[in-house]
Structure formats: C-alpha cells, structure tokens
Length: 348
Ligand SMILES: [Zn+2]
Ligand SMILES: [Zn+2]
Image (cartoon, rainbow, N blue to C red; front, top):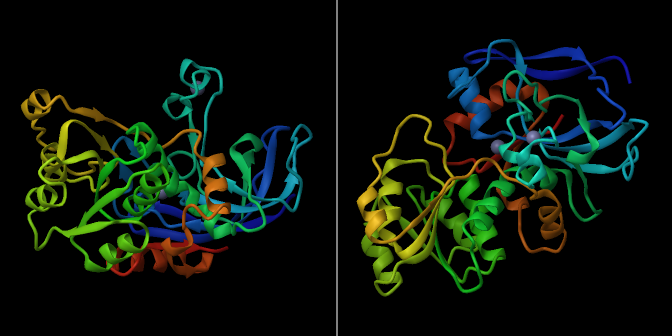
C-alpha cells in the first residue's frame, strides 16, 4: 500500500507532533501491514516525551511513540503463512535476530539485536499503519477486542515476572505498586495459582482496583507500616514471593524484609532516577533469591488464550480513550492525572 498516514512523532522534550508520514513498506516477504486499532500510552512513552531519553536510549532523530498495540492486517508479504488480510492481531513490539545464543535458547528478550517499537531509533505504533514481521503478530479470536490485544504488552511483563519468580499453586505473593504493571502482575500471580495476594500502593483508588482484580489484601503505604502489616497477614512467616513493580528504593528494602526465609524477590520495576541501596547482608543470611527481568519472552500466545478463556481481565485496565490527533495533549493529561488514569489508549 502506498500513500500517507498520520503518526504522533516526538521531536524533542515535550514536543510531540501529529504529522503525515509515508505508509511503511513491507521490509521483507515475511512482513504484514497492520492498520493500528489501539495503542496504549505507557510510562516509558511519557518518560521519552518528558526527558527525551530512558537511560542509554536517547531520542536523537524524530521518532513516533507507542508500543502497546493491536490492529487489523491489511496486506501480507508473499511468504506469510497463517495470517490473511482482515485478521485482527496483537503486535509483540520487539522482534529479535532469531539466530544468536539467546534467541536459540528461547530467551529472545535478551538478544543484543532487538528491534523494539518506540525505542530509539525505531518508530512506534502511535500511527495509522505498522509494517511488522508475521512471527511477532498474534491472531486474536473473535471474543478478544483490539483494546485487549493492545493490553497484552503490559500484561506480558506481569506474566513474565510470575513465571520467572516460579509462582506455584498456594503461594503467598506481595505485589509492590499497583500501577498498570502491578495490576497485571496481580492477575498473572492469581492465574499461576497464588492464593494470597497482598498489594501495596499510596493511592486508594488503585488499591480498590487491585482488590477487584484479585488482591486478597491491600496496604496503603501512606497510612500503614508494610513490614508490620505483612507480618500480621502472614502470621510472621512472610510471603513466598515479592513482585517489586514500583521501582523505588523503599520497596526493595522492605521486600527483603517481608519475604520469607529462602523466598524470592522478583524485580520488575525500573529504577530510572535512583540507585537503591540493597541490604545485601540480609539477603545473604536469609538465603533469598533475587531475580532481574527485562521485558518478557514467549508470553503472547498464552496471554491471548488467557483473555479468551476469561482467566484475566485486561478490559478493566483501560480507563481513557483518545484519537490519534489528540495524542500530544492526551499524553500530557495522562501524565498529570496519574491518580485517575490506569491506562489511556490511543485509537487511530
Ligand atoms: Zn509499555
Ligand atoms: Zn538474537
């Protein structure tokens, strides 16, 4: 397909413009052209908008934002099998080399050669069209909406965290932070069999949503001491697993205290501005496991199935919807109304 499309392009700090760009070409016979139907606004998009960088990823040339997307296929390359125009798909936003040690061992999220949407220098999916390799597109069944398909991206982080932490039936889990990723982690922990899920945050409305989505107890950090509260809730034992989704020093330090002896602290949140002091001696003497996490891997097929089967609820995450033209204002507004918004979605 040729012609132009609209896209929301980041030119610099606080400078996002909706402009015409050429419709992207299929870069190979294994590519599809997807008409984007929904793309979530992520904290990382807002971070790029406000700071022009995330760590070592610096926006140097104009780049469109957005990586949590789903849409409808409008064109397929000659070698694409199993997908045809009209199919609705979730877009896994990072594709890898498929050849290196990490790709070959099933951990392609650790590949050094990943093309990731809206991660400089690659354009994102706040656009009308996206050309993408077919093996990173996942067909949605009829009972799964494009909005839900877009939410598989943040859910994947929660699912990967639950898997890496090795959550099993009957486990007690603490999820630190109930932003979008925390809310996904709750659902992933529950789907993996966790029976008690304690959730912390400072915002009462988020804790309420957490209870709706599977938290069995919530702790408001503004009012309650988390270590005492968890000791009360677990009879002094602590939880089997902490999923640290807040990216704050305080939460890491308390994670090391609220987890049981020999338990698992799964890091999920990113530490953008601060380097947490880690209580290493406590980790040593309590024989804790601490695990890192980078994005997710092999989560899309399972996530599609879990939505279709009603095991998880990603609809409830979406609280606000915007047109593509509104993207610049919408992103600012979402950033300024973090307490009200769980997820804002751009719908081109
Ligand atoms: Zn995201
Ligand atoms: Zn690779």
